Image (tube, rainbow, N blue to C red):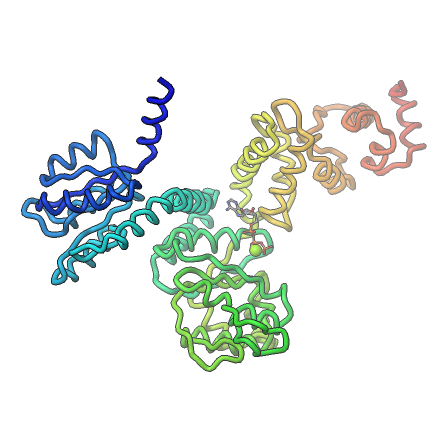
Length: 472
Ligand SMILES: Nc1ncnc2c1ncn2[C@@H]1O[C@H](COP(=O)(O)OP(=O)(O)OP(=O)(O)O)[C@@H](O)[C@H]1O
Ligand SMILES: [Mg+2]
């Protein structure tokens, strides 16, 4: 019993190859030869219907199909198989004269083509490699899909007209081949997010997205990183190295903080952008590349041009397609959606079950003007979620904002209406008593904190508590 079981298992592990050829004798010959290696199981078919029926019944691990057959072409077979399985290894057999059609088969998605008479070693190698690589390809495709989702248009949240415009811009730019884009915006407004979304929404998303921060490296190092170098170009160049411009070929080069580029590199970059050619440091050969170039800065480039620190010709070259990302304070209507989004993100990350942000806490968030924009909001929610327990994120989970909001109003009304319920019509004394009581409660009876927030000394607070009967 156990032996039989073992045999079945081994048979199942040997990959199954279907061979389709109207010349059945040839197909059988091929199968016999393939079978000799003991690495594949084979089934042969002369009729396409039979092949497809069997394929549906029991999908194979790989397919070998002839190119020219009376009822269906190998190209059509490839196309149909590809639709249902993007990673199935498919090989097409051709006669020498059919080379052009063989290339068609590659376009339809075949892994490769082989000329008849088939070199068995070559076929065995190709088949084995394709079968081995399949899990890797599937994994790579999953990662790619995840990235595409993470950086799809849906990743840019918000309903404000400015955000709608931003999404339209991303969509339009993604369709243009090799554009040069300039993203402007304060820190934390989403420039990196937008750059990646452009890349992953474009037809070149299978190419690399390569990011470099122009302010993070000294000029010489940055130059070597960007353009690459030949062995011996400078003392430390022991080996030749490809630069990021080359790595991003066929994809996107994202130059962040472009406003911090040195004068010399500004000239070199302009040269490259105009010709899309460059030389490695110490190299003589001109290398031509094709890619998207996205630049970003939180500086005012026009001002830098006027001040003479940024070349005007480079500015005009990169600012053909420019978009300014709005600061969060200008799109406050989107704040609740963003805040709730980050609440969900950190619910997952911290394994919490905070179901909502309280209306008072939302009002407190809305009162802040967010100099650090969406990144700051994300950080504030992250910190609040660490403290939050229960089902609601409350004002008490946002101590920094509360203090600030209170301080802002401390000069006058002394009232933070979002978290303090003081009804109108109270006498000043009653309102003061109530406000002190609630502030103390908010800080769990800490006289020190309450005195700070109320802007009075501890002694003064003690006197007021005595006066109002709030000493416990
Ligand atoms: N509209 C948006 N929708 C969802 N998330 C956003 C949005 N805008 C920004 N973010 C998020 O805010 C954070 C900061 O964004 P990002 O790093 O892209 O900003 P930046 O403009 O590149 O900042 P810096 O100038 O500091 O580099 C990221 O976590 C990003 O995902
Ligand atoms: Mg950034």
